Amino acid sequence: MPQPLAPCQIAIAVRPSQREGNRDVARDLTDIVLAVAAQLRGLGYAPVLEENSASELDARTVSGLPTSSMADIGRSHGVAIVLGGDGTFISVARHLAPHNVPIIGVNLGRLGFLTDLTLSNLTESLPRLLAGEYREERRVLLNVVSSLAAAEQYLAVNDVVVNRGGATSLVDLEISLNDRFAYGFRADGVIVATPTGSTAYALSAGGPIMAPFVNAFTIVPIAPHALTNRPIVVADDSVIRITVARAREALASIDGHQVIPLNEGDSVEIKRAADTVRLWHPLDYDYYHTLREKLGWTETPEGLSRRNPVLRR
Figure (tube, one colour):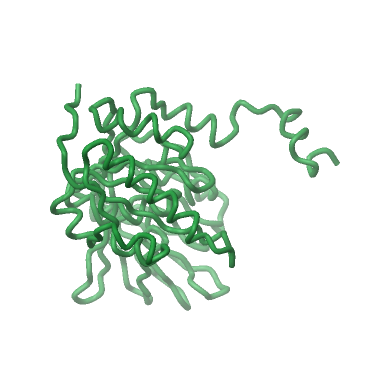
């Protein structure tokens, strides 16, 4: 049984949804952050606001909260509470994984595969988690480096996508596994996804759903020219190299956040990272329940049609 978290600093990170358009959400987010901070103080912890999150909120209202950089949070905080959708969670997770800081996700988005608490149950659930009533899960990451000179290394929680960028023509790509040529194909691109990312872009491209405890990655072509090019699953100790054989333009995207321009002959090497993401779930957390709920697996066509007028036509 995990031990209760001793009094310490707890970070709060939040991002407004990009889907809100011009709607002013700073006030709503500020109220949520202040409520969480007050709850943490009542439980004997010191809330600290992540500095980029502070810039998204009402500055005067949150001025009483100390702020900290992501690097400092990694070095000195006991846990981080992420308020937002999966995109917010992924952004924070990439920064905190090297520091081994656990994350509690609170869903303010739509799907929320990774952020399983809600505002409605936070008051009840958060004290239990901090008291040691949690189930810890570790999610693997991808380590990504390109063949470019002095290339920076990146971490990916969900996926690495190599695609045709803004060009209208397809790209020719070659896949090597453990330094041995595997196959080549022409397509809009290819996705290499972790089990976490198997329910993201890879799923919409026809890839399989992988449970987070499966030690594998999936390689999913995006709109391949030949219908025989299908997704494959490889062991997560594989070293995957994607080489751009022919392209007018090509890009490598890491979790949709960082982009690496690629030319013909350039490649990216992808392998399992040494770091993992630590998630704290409630004791009743069930991954398959999450899939049923988020993907509507229990719905019948009749049930869906009653809620969707388009399906009734």
